[in-house]
Length: 360
Image 1 (cartoon, rainbow, N blue to C red):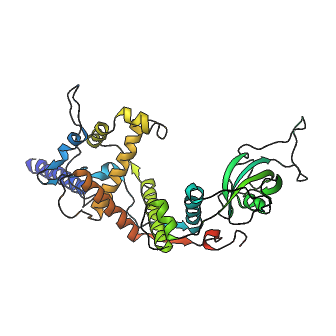
Image 2 (tube, one colour):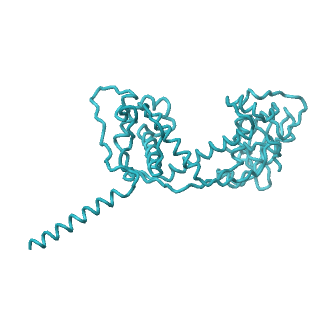
């Protein structure tokens, strides 16, 4: 009987030991300690940002946050990523930032008799109307011309940049400054508005002023961005790198799944970000302070988990934890970027900025 009991006891002990080992082997790069439950604070205490991170600092270096098994809190896809890079989109960003958002580089005028050409930057007032089966402006029951929502306004348009739909920009070509005109335009089938997807409309428009786009040079770029690029190619390479890294970060976080949020790090952020700060600067973008903090926690957990999985550690010593964390996140971004597959989708047009034509 004693042998039987001893045998049963051995089996139970062995199962418990194997179960414990299995749990500990989920992630070889994570620590075995559990997450701290909470940071206690007596009522009425005011805690500054530096004090809120004092628990993390030790000696001349820093003690890392999330010092526990992160796989219990978040799933992170560690596989190399693949993204599509649309060169059209990047060209549009260049055109829009350097010209449409850079009024200091433009000199508008209203030359009498001037005929609008491709490559011009114009100020245009316009109204958009639905059309009937015969292609004429559609009338309502009272005989009034039917405008479509969002189809009227006054804007600056760089003709050839595709900031507007292509047919709208084409329709402006040939108009005389100061003289009302009208033209038809067809919206893309995937425009995103059911009433307009693939539909042909009529625009009434008048171009009031026109400006020539300044030459696309490194000097123009540096004056606008306050940079020191030596060529337009260097600028475009930096722009592509920045765009790709942001896209990869979005994909990394989009593929994550949070099981639960750690209380210790959440309270660190709650001490750092006040409700007053949220109400002033962030309320229009996030539903609540708690939701915003959860977004930050998700990002932090994902980056720490990724760094540990690939053994990414900042070199040197850091007395300031935020500097350490900034370098850690930079290493993660670089690692993801270096291991990603980037599919460049060629331009479907070459903008006037680079000597091309809207009608190519």
